[in-house]
Image (tube, helix red, strand yellow):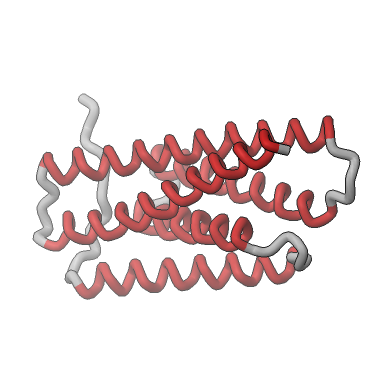
Length: 175
């Protein structure tokens, strides 16, 4: 029981760091593109924030895998609400990974990718803050996730419009 508590604390730390760093990434990218020039210092800071987000994803993956292994091998209790939250966490973790791969390979632009990953982190905050005694239906979660995603996209697009920028942050050329 102590190990599950410790794992959940680590998981909540990962989720908090991921949500916070994603918020900082959005704010810092708006500051970086406001003058239509991204300085080397701004690019380096954005790179550090992206690294922090990736470390949060890694910590979330490790804690989720560890918790899943413990629960499915050692606990024979009623796991219906845990399984729902566990499944949703794995799905959102997959979304985070896919979004970062898509951003890295240029399949989606950074603005859309950051919007989706921000809403994904906030959805993780939502489902892990949800009391386990109250069942979380898949429909309620999907509705919440869709709302978070559209609000994130709207807010980020609006913020970019307010700073008069349609510029997307691109990676430095590796050449």
